Length: 282
Ligand code: GLU
Image (cartoon, rainbow, N blue to C red; front, side, top):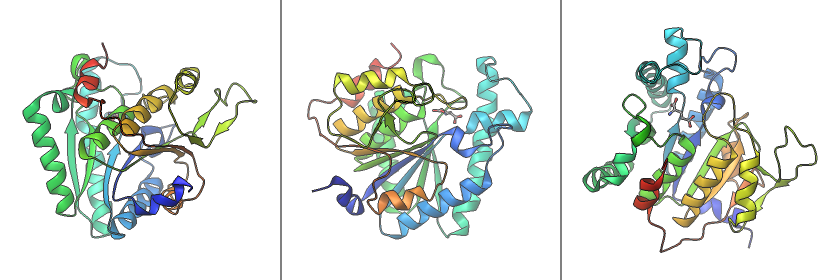
């Protein structure tokens, strides 16, 4: 059986969207058209009786724009200040858009400590469960205003997979500015071949991630997406990487169409999320 045929039965879905897919490249300002379509698609999935969690980047990029800070690599405190302003702006926009479709958006900000610390993890899991049972749509980001190197996830690809693992999601969709996984970087090698389906994440596949470049806006490249695939699939969730240039791709994915790269879940009893997170950035 084609695993895409089972997508319609998924119950708990995490969708991750990167900064480059939510903002205009030239200015860093929010792309309202894309945001609107994204929110409409998520509400529609929710209306089908599914639970939806959005992991959204964009805080720093939006904050830079609001504070008129042009440079990408400023000091840590500058980045944190941008995130503080941008995250609030981002949530204000999401709240408004979700409300237009009579849905409730909720904010959850996380650091590595949220996972590593037993009490924090317990509380976070309970909060997700409560919000989902109340019909809200949690919107997650890294808590960039306080995260420093020691406690940061660093990229939202990994964060979204960690969230999928924490809440026991059965599907993770990474929306990005690439179509999916290629044998090599398609921007540099025109012979690079698209890979629609990955049954197992072996060394050979992991190696492909290292060859690809990331986007100019977000922090994730193919490498972090394959790390995310490892976390998600070992935790029992299928994962799909797809291109966010048209957000309507979400319902096409949910219809089971052959879009993006599909990574098949292989739940691994031995996978330990806490140790994994502890080992990040070390
Ligand atoms: N947390 C960052 C932000 O919201 C983005 C991280 C990423 O691009 O993966 O700006």
